[in-house]
Length: 120
Image 1 (tube, rainbow, N blue to C red):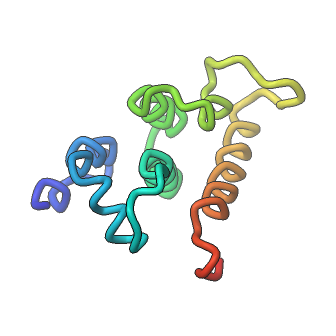
Image 2 (image 1 turned 180 degrees about the vertical axis):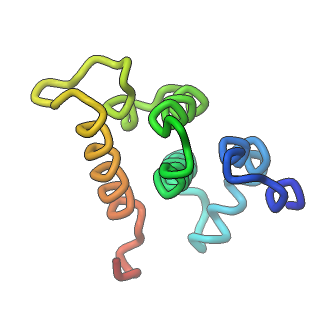
Protein backbone atom coordinates (compact mmCIF):
# COMPACT_ATOMS: atom_id res chain seq x y z
CA UNK A 1 0.00 0.00 0.00
CA UNK A 2 2.96 2.30 0.48
CA UNK A 3 3.46 2.22 -3.31
CA UNK A 4 -0.07 3.51 -3.77
CA UNK A 5 0.34 6.26 -1.18
CA UNK A 6 3.52 7.50 -2.84
CA UNK A 7 2.03 7.95 -6.31
CA UNK A 8 2.06 11.44 -7.79
CA UNK A 9 -0.98 12.87 -9.58
CA UNK A 10 0.53 12.14 -13.00
CA UNK A 11 1.22 8.51 -12.04
CA UNK A 12 -2.42 7.47 -11.60
CA UNK A 13 -1.99 5.02 -14.46
CA UNK A 14 0.01 2.80 -12.08
CA UNK A 15 -2.96 2.12 -9.77
CA UNK A 16 -4.13 -1.08 -11.53
CA UNK A 17 -0.59 -2.48 -11.53
CA UNK A 18 -0.26 -1.86 -7.82
CA UNK A 19 -3.74 -3.01 -6.83
CA UNK A 20 -4.40 -5.51 -9.60
CA UNK A 21 -3.40 -8.56 -7.57
CA UNK A 22 -5.97 -7.74 -4.90
CA UNK A 23 -8.71 -6.22 -7.11
CA UNK A 24 -11.20 -9.04 -6.58
CA UNK A 25 -10.63 -9.03 -2.85
CA UNK A 26 -11.13 -5.26 -2.72
CA UNK A 27 -14.31 -5.50 -4.80
CA UNK A 28 -15.66 -8.18 -2.47
CA UNK A 29 -14.79 -6.15 0.62
CA UNK A 30 -16.36 -2.97 -0.77
CA UNK A 31 -19.47 -4.63 -2.17
CA UNK A 32 -19.93 -7.10 0.66
CA UNK A 33 -20.41 -9.99 -1.74
CA UNK A 34 -18.22 -12.10 -4.02
CA UNK A 35 -16.91 -10.56 -7.20
CA UNK A 36 -19.86 -9.99 -9.51
CA UNK A 37 -17.74 -9.79 -12.66
CA UNK A 38 -17.69 -5.98 -12.63
CA UNK A 39 -14.23 -5.54 -11.12
CA UNK A 40 -12.63 -4.48 -14.40
CA UNK A 41 -15.51 -2.11 -15.08
CA UNK A 42 -15.12 -0.57 -11.62
CA UNK A 43 -11.39 -0.09 -12.03
CA UNK A 44 -11.96 1.45 -15.45
CA UNK A 45 -14.46 3.88 -13.97
CA UNK A 46 -12.04 4.80 -11.17
CA UNK A 47 -9.27 5.50 -13.64
CA UNK A 48 -11.52 7.48 -15.95
CA UNK A 49 -12.99 9.64 -13.19
CA UNK A 50 -9.56 10.26 -11.65
CA UNK A 51 -8.22 11.42 -15.00
CA UNK A 52 -11.29 13.57 -15.56
CA UNK A 53 -10.87 15.27 -12.19
CA UNK A 54 -7.18 15.93 -12.92
CA UNK A 55 -7.70 17.03 -16.54
CA UNK A 56 -6.96 20.70 -15.85
CA UNK A 57 -3.52 19.72 -14.55
CA UNK A 58 -2.58 17.87 -17.75
CA UNK A 59 -1.29 19.30 -21.00
CA UNK A 60 -3.27 16.73 -23.03
CA UNK A 61 -5.89 14.91 -20.95
CA UNK A 62 -7.29 13.11 -24.00
CA UNK A 63 -3.88 11.61 -24.67
CA UNK A 64 -3.73 10.40 -21.07
CA UNK A 65 -7.20 8.92 -21.42
CA UNK A 66 -6.16 7.20 -24.67
CA UNK A 67 -3.24 5.63 -22.81
CA UNK A 68 -5.68 4.29 -20.22
CA UNK A 69 -7.81 2.93 -23.08
CA UNK A 70 -4.79 0.97 -24.32
CA UNK A 71 -3.73 -0.11 -20.82
CA UNK A 72 -7.21 -1.48 -20.16
CA UNK A 73 -7.15 -3.62 -23.31
CA UNK A 74 -9.26 -1.38 -25.57
CA UNK A 75 -12.67 -1.67 -23.86
CA UNK A 76 -15.56 -0.93 -26.20
CA UNK A 77 -17.19 1.27 -23.56
CA UNK A 78 -14.33 3.78 -23.84
CA UNK A 79 -13.69 3.55 -27.59
CA UNK A 80 -15.97 6.52 -28.32
CA UNK A 81 -13.67 8.71 -26.22
CA UNK A 82 -10.56 8.01 -28.27
CA UNK A 83 -9.66 10.60 -30.90
CA UNK A 84 -8.18 8.12 -33.36
CA UNK A 85 -11.10 5.68 -33.24
CA UNK A 86 -13.85 5.99 -35.88
CA UNK A 87 -16.92 7.91 -34.83
CA UNK A 88 -20.08 5.95 -34.18
CA UNK A 89 -23.08 6.88 -36.32
CA UNK A 90 -24.54 10.17 -35.15
CA UNK A 91 -21.56 11.16 -32.99
CA UNK A 92 -20.06 14.61 -33.35
CA UNK A 93 -16.33 14.94 -33.88
CA UNK A 94 -13.86 17.25 -32.18
CA UNK A 95 -12.31 17.49 -28.76
CA UNK A 96 -15.27 19.25 -27.12
CA UNK A 97 -17.61 16.49 -28.30
CA UNK A 98 -15.23 13.90 -26.82
CA UNK A 99 -15.12 15.80 -23.53
CA UNK A 100 -18.94 15.86 -23.50
CA UNK A 101 -19.03 12.09 -24.15
CA UNK A 102 -16.51 11.58 -21.35
CA UNK A 103 -18.84 13.43 -18.92
CA UNK A 104 -21.78 11.33 -20.15
CA UNK A 105 -19.76 8.11 -19.80
CA UNK A 106 -18.89 8.94 -16.18
CA UNK A 107 -22.49 9.79 -15.32
CA UNK A 108 -23.83 6.57 -16.86
CA UNK A 109 -21.11 4.38 -15.33
CA UNK A 110 -21.78 5.84 -11.89
CA UNK A 111 -25.46 5.01 -12.26
CA UNK A 112 -24.70 1.50 -13.49
CA UNK A 113 -22.14 0.73 -10.78
CA UNK A 114 -24.00 2.19 -7.81
CA UNK A 115 -25.85 -0.57 -5.96
CA UNK A 116 -29.60 0.07 -5.79
CA UNK A 117 -29.52 0.28 -1.99
CA UNK A 118 -27.28 3.39 -2.17
CA UNK A 119 -28.82 6.73 -3.15
CA UNK A 120 -27.05 8.60 -5.95
